[in-house]
Image 1: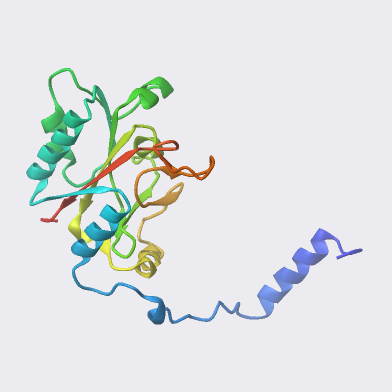
Image 2 (image 1 turned 30 degrees about the vertical axis):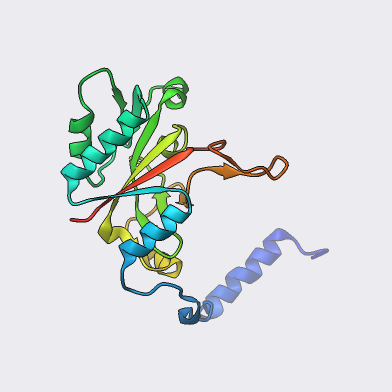
Length: 219
C-alpha cells in the first residue's frame, strides 16, 4: 500500500492477533472424492504400480525379500550398489545376501563419482498409496535423496502395512508429533519418464529407468 511502511503493516497484524483468536480454515469433507476405501490394498497397489511401469514382487518374509533383491541386483549386472543407511524392512538380510564377492555395497557415498557410477539403489519407503500405485519417499539424515535418484535401477522395500488406501489418507499421517519431518517428500509413480522432445516418451532420463518394489507381507 502506497505510503504505508512495512512496520505499520506488521504492527496491524500483531494487533489483530492480540485482539482475538485466529480462525482456521473450514473443515472440508473429502469423502465424495475418495477412490479407494479399505479392502485389498495390496492388490490395488500392485495393479496400479504395475500399470505405471514398476515391477512389484511379493515376499512372505524378510529373508525372501533379500533373495528377491539379490536376484534383481544380479540381473542388473551390478558392480556397485547404494543402500540407504537408515533402518527399513529387510535391510539386515539384504546386506547379508549381498555381502561377499566382487559387489561393492555403499551406504555412505564419499563423492559424486560413487553416486553416479552406482548400478542399483536400494531404499525403504515411508508409505505407499494404493489409489495411484505410488511410493512415498522422504529425505532426511538417514535417507539421502540421491540413493533413489542416481542409479539406473531403484529397488524399494515396502512393508504391507505401510500401504494406505487413498491419497487423501496420507496427509492424516502428518499430524504434529509424529516425527515425520524431512527436507522434502516425493511421490514416485513408475520409472523416470519425459516426453519433452518432440513428444517422444523416453524412460530413465532424469532418474531410474527401472523401479522394483519388494512388498514384505509379514510386517
